[in-house]
Amino acid sequence: MARLGEAGHRKHKEGAADMYPLTRMRRCRRGEGLRRLVQETSLSRDDLILPVFVAAGTGRKEMVASMPGVWRMSADVLGGWVEGLRAGTVLLLGVPDADDKDESGSAALREDGIVPSALRALKEQRPEVVVITDVCLCGYTSHGHCGILTPSGEVDNDETLGLLSRMAQVHAAAGADVVAPSGMMDGQVQAIREGLDESGLQDAAIKSDAAKFASAFYGPFRGAAHSSPSFGDRRTHQLAPANRREALRDALLEEDEGADWLMVKPAMPYLDILSELREATLLPIAAYQVSGAYAMLKHAIAARAFVARDVVTESILCIKRAGADAVITYFAEQVCDWLED
Image 1 (tube, rainbow, N blue to C red):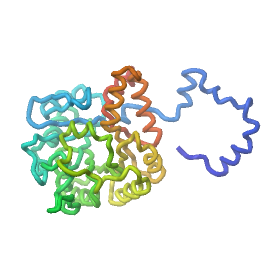
Image 2 (image 1 turned 90 degrees about the horizontal axis):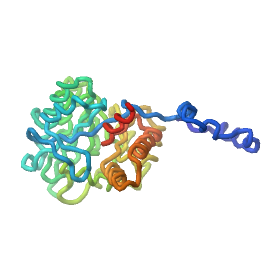
Image 3 (image 1 turned 180 degrees about the vertical axis):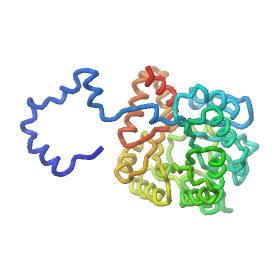
């Protein structure tokens, strides 16, 4: 939405003395029909992306203890579950078993791995569903960090790029419409774009976690994905919560590398970043209502502090208002139900 320009602001100020009672802002708020008519931001099924945790093995459907109402499902269970899916887009997040993890996250590169298997099962049942896949090694490494480690225990950015590129190719070849690098490695979009194009997978889009902050709001997710680092943290590559300009610079660099989408993550505490990025780019922007925000709302709803429909819808609508074209949210299916009422 365009901001009030200098000339418009001056005109507004000059006429301020004559505004009331001639101008009454409540006129267009009197009834539901009028309120809908002047509504500036709307919410639809097409705005929502549902994150789905994919477990290893078969016949598995497990409730995530830290995220009430969220499940981990194996590929075969996911194939049946997707028949009733209401959201038009899903984000697949692989959760391998502990004994399938190693220092380099090699399970992430298998063509018969967790996410490729889930992709094929999902596309077989619902080919029209848009599938985004998370491209990061943290869930697949034995140490829980987002790439290969140096002898001193730091993430080796450049050595990790080749693995991320290969992981994206495996996902695209299995049917991913969009690959979503989330590791915040410098040069990750360029490496993935080059790898996809050289492999004849040029039609796969890249949605980059371009402004991903080192946030405490990821806590419940790490329990769901079994991806907590075994030592240290991720502040060497994720953004510092205090830094606004750095976040915008990082995002615009990934646009220059060839990203088709940008993303702000988390959404709720970083709506200022989302708004400013919207002003700075013409690319579509996604924003992630992450696990911490989901858990907070779920617990508050369970305690009857909020009415579920009202608070969830408002929280997602505000993310859209700030500039998001799409919102990744664990509430996607519930919101789709409400929108159909």
